[in-house]
Image 1 (spheres, rainbow, N blue to C red):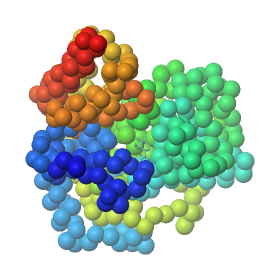
Image 2: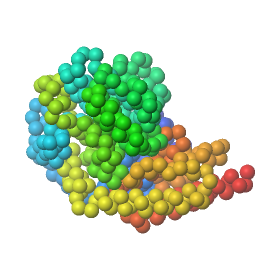
Image 3: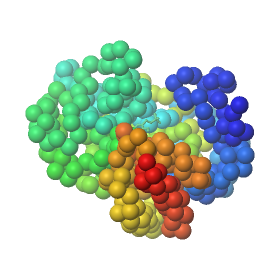
Image 4: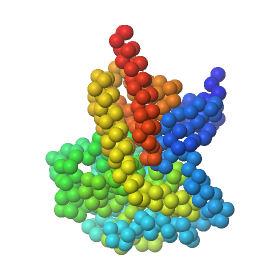
Length: 407
Ligand code: PMP
């Protein structure tokens, strides 16, 4: 029989593509969540890098609730003041002249791919529709975004992918030079690969990408679904490395945990788009956008991003101490508060086991790639809370090390 705080979800009609055992969470406060049995967890996962402002934010609840009493949904046949106010925060009229709202990261990338194709086909010709992406990439599970995702596990069961989706090795400049030409509409890239193991785009690759995309008139789409909105310490991670992306996609933290995405496009792309060529029923509704303006104002407010950078250095310092202590930590990866420990897995130590034991001790962690433990705490975390999490992680890792020595 399942424990009181665990659900065997298939009995409740969840499909087989999900694990059958879920922890049932009940409420949250700051960087902590509580399960239905009242057990408290320090959350170093943020609902997969979503809850940037943590849990139980009273302002978010008040804004959403006030908006819900006024108006919840209007469709894309009308607009609302919250949608207009949030759009004007994202679009400055210079670099980006329009934003397409959606509901998820996949949708944001789907829109980016469609806008890029519209622009390319109408500018360069009907054969110029290809999309380049990279090993380790994760861009979503809808058919367009999926085609540019790397891991075959997500793709193979579904038959042929959309034509023109090419994937080459991440950070391989030579391969990029060989591959890129005018037949590509866009390159879609993550500056830090959120699901693919937290590898970062090298400076050399970023500058080659910029140069070649100008040369062949190819758009750079920065998939910032996970890295955007301050997660790496910059508002947009692609700006942090000077990538000058033409299109940026955002989602996870955008609306404080409510589903919202944004695809930012420049004027020269927008100029090629005609009425009705893309759309959404729910995207950019008044509740999500009202909350999103609040989240935006906090993240872009004075000192917030500087604070993320400072806490990142602090956390990296703590992780370096762990790396010295435990030989099975091979590398520290990532940027800002999207960090990972590459684990040298063996029959005793593996990422899932570490996560399981950490959870029992009250710390929620994530996995990314094959063997990387991912830490993505809420951006509002304090240094004391970082210490608390690191102390739990240290004690978990110690248990694993002792296990190794007794075997
Ligand atoms: N792009 C990136 C970089 C992501 O990390 C994710 C989700 N992990 C997605 C796209 C897809 O987002 P969603 O699950 O909201 O569709």
